[in-house]
Length: 121
Image (cartoon, one colour):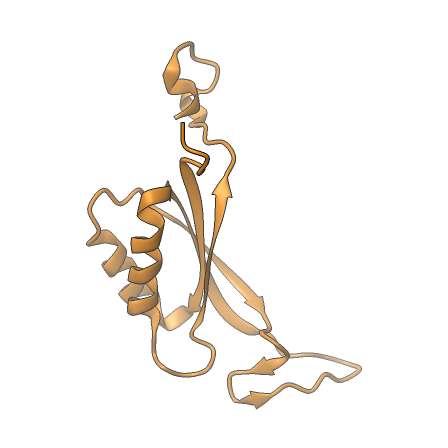
């Protein structure tokens, strides 16, 4: 048995206008498992897309991005990260980030509680 987790969660924050490029690229991958997509807002290192960020007493500015989450086999994670990065890259500040997290467990809800080895796959 390997000490590496069998499943990995790939999380990417991308610019909203790059959604179509990234989804098309992901659908071109062999054995692509699917994804979840969420609209998110945030700040990276205190700087906005146009330059430095200055907070005021009455408000602050957050950048809008899309968060894509993909649960995949660990051996597929690097290819998925590379695919997202290539499709989402504009070369400008604020292109986004990608990170991976080991998935300690993976259970399909429709199979939960069913006897047999499928319960945890």
